[in-house]
Length: 151
Image 1: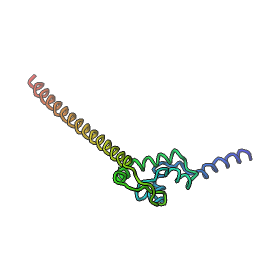
Image 2: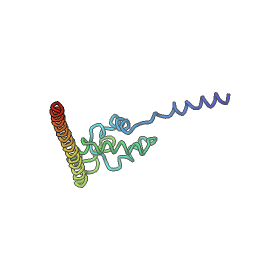
Image 3: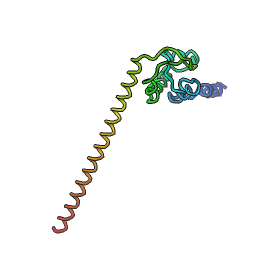
Image 4: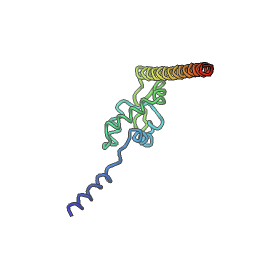
C-alpha cells in the first residue's frame, strides 16, 4: 500500500504542473492575450509589473526573457524608432516615448545591421578564399598529372 501510494503520488505533480514553458511560447501567449504585444505597440515602462499583477504564477525570469525577445525584435525596434506613445496591457495609451528611447532603438538597429553586414562580408571573403584555394589545387593537380606522365 505504501509503495502504491508513493507511485500514485509521483504522477500527480507532473500532471498538475504545467509542462516546462519556453520564453517564445510565453511570448506567443502574451501576443494572444494582450493587444500591445499582438500589434507590436511600444510597451509602457513597468509592463512586467502589470503582467505579474494579472498572471502572478508566472516565472519572473521566463517573463523577462520573453519580454527581452519581444523588445529586442527588429519589428519592435523599428516601431520604437518612430513611436510617440507607450501602451499598457489593455492597449490604453499612456506615457510618451522619449527621444532617448527612440535614439536607443535606432542605435541598436544600426549595430545589428552593421554586425550582419560584417558577417555577410566575412562569409563572402571565406567563400572567395575557398574558391581560390580550389582553383590553385586544381592547377597543381593538372601540373602533377602532366609531369608524372612524362616521367
